Length: 142
Length: 113
Ligand SMILES: Nc1ncnc2c1ncn2[C@@H]1O[C@H](COP(=O)(O)OP(=O)(O)O)[C@@H](O)[C@H]1O
Ligand SMILES: [Mg+2]
Image (tube, rainbow over all chains, first blue to last red; front, side, top):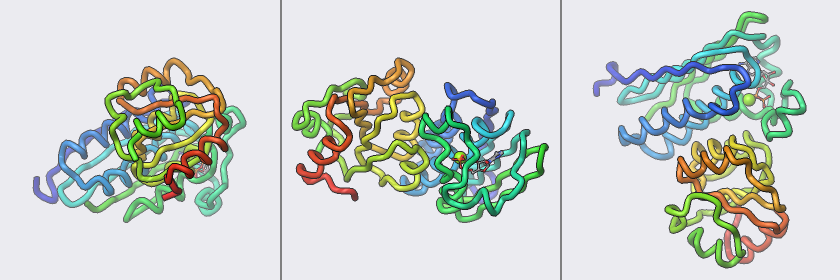
């Protein structure tokens, strides 16, 4: 695999689908393992993918997660239709969450998802438009 | 220390993941907040929680944890058990409180590493 060619994985995410939650990230993880990517790198990618996946399931209406796996890096692009994020600076703060109580009871809504993604990735870009949706682009070098 | 040794010492009930009981535990982490576990637990940790729903399996799998201990007599949801079986994630239960589990793990030399 050269640095530019790569494997593209794509998964559709649906709001409130707690049954399928984590499947996209698990498949991305399995593919990375088959490719022999270093375990500590895989772990950072898996955590970032899961947090992004859960945010679509919890906070948005529907979305798509794509993983572009190249020899030197993995790119995660997560795009959703939904309420968007009014104040990204606030959303990035550890502990900030708008998750409702029934979501918090499951242990989600700690307000640490976006900070976890930012910490686990080498490049983290978030764009959001209110009442339209959110787009995340993350790069992790292998 | 292996999970099997911990299971024996604490008389834990093995619900799923029989095939992975020989894995070595690197340390432990206790929390019911999933993103906190994702961000703070270390790979190879044994995780003590009172959550029993299916999403804990994905967390353990993706964060590379060796085992989930569901404390306080909480019964895991059937979907959680099914997922743990499919993914071969070690799922353990106990009527001991989370506090008691962590204390006993620490006594066995399992620290917060
Ligand atoms: N995809 C998204 N669509 C709409 N809002 C989002 C999205 N992702 C995050 N947010 C907002 O940012 C907040 C913080 O997100 P995060 O750090 O993942 O914490 P949590 O998901 O635990 O609330 C969320 O509570 C929500 O208000
Ligand atoms: Mg989140």
